[in-house]
Image 1 (spheres, rainbow, N blue to C red):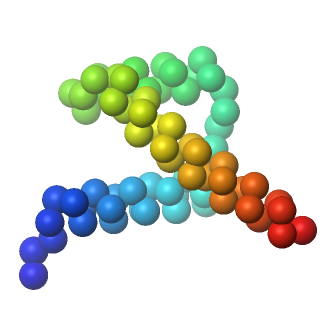
Image 2: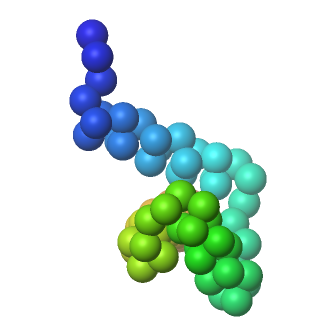
Length: 72
């Protein structure tokens, strides 16, 4: 059974979130902005689209961290 593009995107998103949670997240704004611009150029997509995607990923990681802290 072939995966739909939507399902591939969902799996990729979960895999990325898990990797970021395991590896940690750097919160240096200047470094992050530079990385987004460089990665967007490498992928051939607009930087603003990658920035929106990054905001979703970072927000999800932040929400999970806060939920863990609130359970203490």
